[in-house]
Image (cartoon, rainbow, N blue to C red; front, side, top):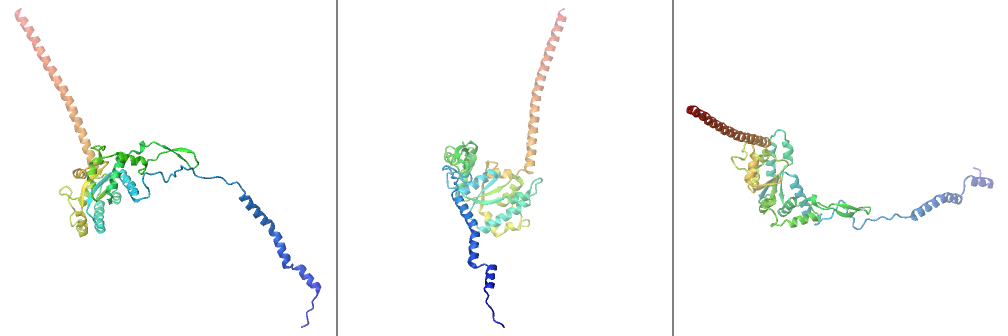
Length: 345
């Protein structure tokens, strides 16, 4: 192989075609200078731009956290709100005293209650929906007492609005009338035992709010469903007999019987009215439910109207008979006088 010859012309030509590293770096730096300057200038422009002042007013109250008279995050406060909502939205509540039922016994009682309610067939009523929304639960007695007083003696519509700052700093009128508000707390505080009317629902139920309590809640006032619940939870023959072993074999299970023996019906709250044991049984014993009650009301109104019409008609008849008898007497006297005159002539 012949030796390679180093030629300066070739070297110069290669250097002209392929730029050196230093030259390339210098050219790249020259190309990057405008973008770097633009970034620096943009950064400086953002940093030197006038910042918009923003801050919440000192007396601003978030709409999701209104002021409360007691801590809203505690379990007692949440139970109070739950009980007040339950009392306002549930038309039929039965109160039971329970004696430390176990979890297995509660499960057996709820199972038999659910089965009995599903078997009720009322035309025009969703029995499946009523049975699914019927619950029996343990209550905190002291908190239930406060909830009853809140529902009965506190009127949220009478709370006066207060002035508060909005997020923009503008003064607006706001009404804080929730169940944990200071107005509700003051209404409960003012409802002492001396100022409570004797005919109020709270005055009738408060003596019974002693010891461990449980509540059966029904979403509708249905005498048929109430009767089915009474046959399971508080049977009393002959009006509300317990189901037979053939019809409900689970009712005679050991856990179910043990749990049912530890339950005692003490009162009921039906459409904001207090009922004792006899009153609850009377509501459950209405024949044909609401339709039967409406028929009884129509019959009572018709009989009252017929009695009133007979009374008014009797008064008119007696007046007519009195006038007729008086007219006959006057005619006889007049005819007798004429006869006497003729005899004298």
